[in-house]
Amino acid sequence: MTVHIAKSVVLPEALNGLTNLADARIGASIVSCSDEFFAKAERMLQAEPAQFIEGKYDDNGKWMDGWETRRKREAGYDWCIVRLGVAGIVSGFDVDTSFFTGNYPASASIEGCYAADDQLEHAEWLPLLSNSVLSPDQHHIFQCDPQKVTHIRINIFPDGGIARLRIYGQVVLEKIDPDQVLDLIGLKNGGRIVAFSDAHFGHPSNLIKPDAGLNMGDGWETKRRRAPGFDWCIIALGQAGHVDQIEVDTAFFKGNFPAFCSIQAAYVENATDAQLIPQSMFWSFLLEQQPLTMDHQHTYSTEISSHEKVNYIRVNMIPDGGISRIRLWGKMSAQ
Image (cartoon, rainbow, N blue to C red):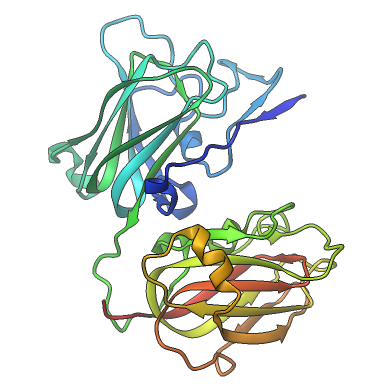
């Protein structure tokens, strides 16, 4: 069967540094929906780009990678309530109709609320996106006034399919004890990938997933380097903090693990992602170059250099290869 992958999208600068709060990898899930006859709503929250598989059908019709409702034969519209992976201040959306050509909704609106799951029936739903026209087979990028929410409700008029729904915002960590140790670059704690040298076999966003790696494909892996130098990626901490322990996990990487790794770090204010790339070459070392071994979790504490608070790190993978996960354990710094 022929498989087609959805095109990527370039986000506006205002959304570029934000976390997708509707990412299933950080616990986003479907609370309820009006209908999901043709395709389960949970597919809409997958991190991977939507795909179209020619000739693939199931018992209800053409298999679609997204949420798809049946054709409505009465007044009304379809809707879906999504619990965000973490509470956050939402600033924008990507309503992606990739591969939905004759079955996309005519329009969509989005509301949000801040409430516990068992209080949704009485929650105040605030408009985040007014009813907006959609087109077939494309990303629709919308921005909104920032609003703190735990759940969103997307309404599609009158029916149809959405391939992917991205909710871009800033993670809000609540009820955090200042003495609590947490993974400062964890995806669920607001960590994000800023830039990287290469991601031929696996994207560096896998490094900061909350769960352990599943296989060799569930990590950051670069192509074989045929020129001097080494591979690198820059990661923004979700919360500025002081690092006490570092874990570098090469799980499943046996014939392709890096020979060495090192980590540089800095505290930088008011810099764009593009500005950070050249700056990062001169950041001081949080972890000097360390040898790595295959399929092993490497833990460092006494090897960490003395430092003040940091909010960015640069991971150097020498010279190339694959790493499954990286954890940066520490405490949040006082703001």
